[in-house]
Image (tube, rainbow, N blue to C red; front, top):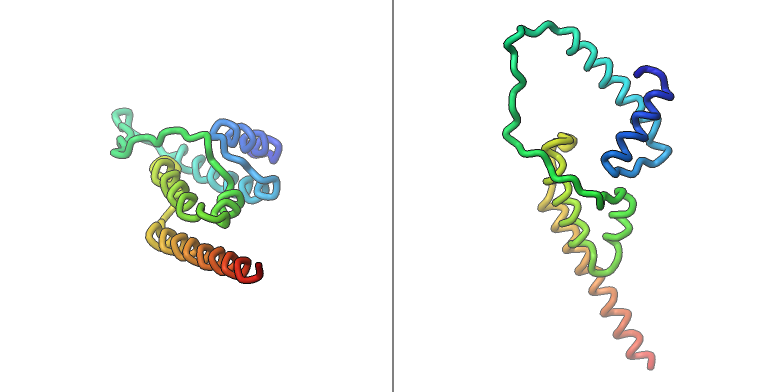
Length: 140
């Protein structure tokens, strides 16, 4: 799978199978990462293993498939809507918890910082709404 068209077909198929939206501008970076991954896999594949070698079993269960994956941009837009910041953060953290054992894509998840920022955002939005309401009441 070395030609760009083969990699593009793989990207499209994998994204569809995982229900992960792939923005067109991401394809070149994904293709570059896959090229490196396949080169490394070929090196591992060249390693001779004894016939009695067994794969190490993971102690982590596979994550349940969730078809409700949203893009980061969509999650960011939703988190700016009044009253949704904390809900969006909790949803994203739940998805990371469910999927990362399989994907292994995060080295550090700053959950408490994300929750604190969402709560701060909600407080600011509430202050702004109350301020706008009080100004509207005064102008009547």
